[in-house]
Length: 387
Image (cartoon, rainbow, N blue to C red):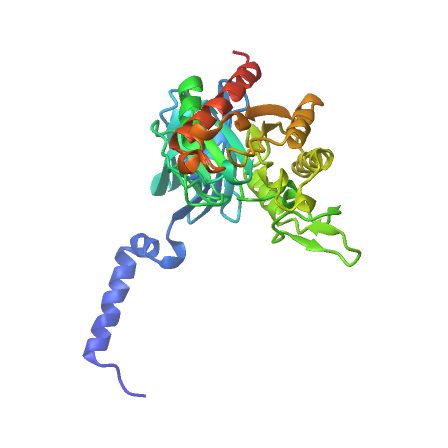
């Protein structure tokens, strides 16, 4: 075996001296022991549903390594949550804690990891809100098919696509279409009225029939005009593939228990007055199917969440309403299954796209649509909050 050279010996001596003089500093630089924090909740722009007029619960959850304990604080709350609070840390480095905050925001969330009384690592989220959250579902006029893209002016309206929160600029994430929606002006109006951040979870899919939103395996005798989300059975009946319903349910569940205030449902045009009369859905069945969707969603999330159902059946100036579908939507509300949403069929030519010739809303029409929703939600929310 060859003898080590003078250069090798000198190098080994230097390493030994470094280890002897600076053991803690060198260990801290080791990749295996680098302190870190992964924050899964809250996310930037996230809005948590308040459980009373004054307070809501924010989940602080994630993982860490190479720290002895964790602390969290929320700047801007003006109460004890602005002070550092200990977060329980599991043996595997994961953590989950619930902090009660005053309704409002935006708040800055800071999480830091410590060892030996020293802060080793920290992370933060700039915008966390406690306010009102709504799930929005149905077809194109609940999604991004308006003639003009809109943006909130308040800076306190957020949108969630099931994974990520962001500012609620059109097109809304998680819904179909690349145009505009009524959600930015509605969010701004709710912020002004209630003084808290507003979150929307847009799930709308353009041109969908209520039949396409049914849970998988639900059968019906006749298909909708578009059959991409339904399939025919050997006996000639049809069934939903359940994809739209699963998406809606997963979005609801991703918000957590009690994570949103209500569902806003705007749909009916694709079931009313179809060019092929065999694809038109009788009002009796519309009522049956939407009632089934509402009941299934409540069962599957384990909460009797409120639904608002709009009056929606308008197509074009010569086809402005379907009395049969409208009666079904009204019956769902009058029997207590849902709450009455706005009558969007009342928004005729001056509020519609293509100089009044289309089914979707123009820019001014989107704002008027938002105003109609605001009228329905404000009175009800005042009752819920005891105002």
